[in-house]
Amino acid sequence: MAYRSSITVNLIPEARQGPFVFHDDLATSCREAAELGFDAVELFFPGPEAVDEAELHSLLKDYNLKVSAFGTGAGWIQHQWTLTDASEAVREKAKTFLCSMLALASRFHAPAILGSMQGRHSPQVPKPQALDLLKTALQELGAYAEQVGSTLLYEPLNRYETNLVSTLGEGVELLRSVQSNHVKILADLFHMNIEEVSPARALVESHYYLGHVHFADTNRRAAGMGHFDYVPIRDALDSAGYTGYLAAEIFPIPDSLTAARQTIESFRKFFK
Ligand code: LER
Ligand code: MN
Image 1: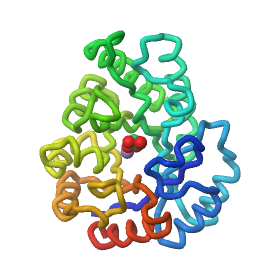
Image 2 (image 1 turned 30 degrees about the horizontal axis):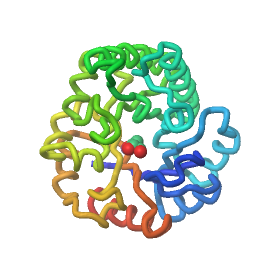
Image 3 (image 1 turned 45 degrees about the vertical axis):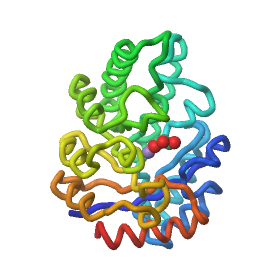
């Protein structure tokens, strides 16, 4: 199977300590990604207004890169907007922000990610109600994604980051009820190492909904710097018929360039 490689670039000041490889200027990050041989960059901006689209288009052209996805974590980190907040006004702000990110993503033929902005259940919003709010929001966002020509990547997160959906199986159950071809599952190998009985089996079982993969080792370092065995993961993605990106959402340990180099070496070793 043909897979594509991608590396994360974060330009949200509040997420400097987050699991992203490059944290500095976009031009340098794109140059370094291209020099190492990545197919794409995965971009985390504060919002659409923070993106100089002409500059981004020209960098992508110059370095022959694509955007694998746009992250939307800024909606949570900077504003605390989620789709399951107790306040309807906050939920609307979350939806508006996600729509604006889907529209941005469509102009780069890329999807947008829904991760932390899914929120959590709470005493004010018990789990069944939160899941219902999430389902309704995903239906609306899926329709919007279809209208603008993008896709929303719904990401199950480990138990320390959400209490709504933590496994691919739970994610598939939710997406089945949503019934949109424009909402897919994002399988993050780091979260899966914590939550899945068998990451490989979970990938095979969610094959129909699988839209994106976050490529990390067990400790959220570059692939090869932890203890994942990537052979069963590759076999599972092969039998799932997956042909999308493996995007490295990892910590820049020991530094950005070493983590990026280790990622592309593991990508070539296991997925080329
Ligand atoms: C988002 O892609 C994700 O995996 C979160 O854990 C980021 O902190
Ligand atoms: Mn992720």
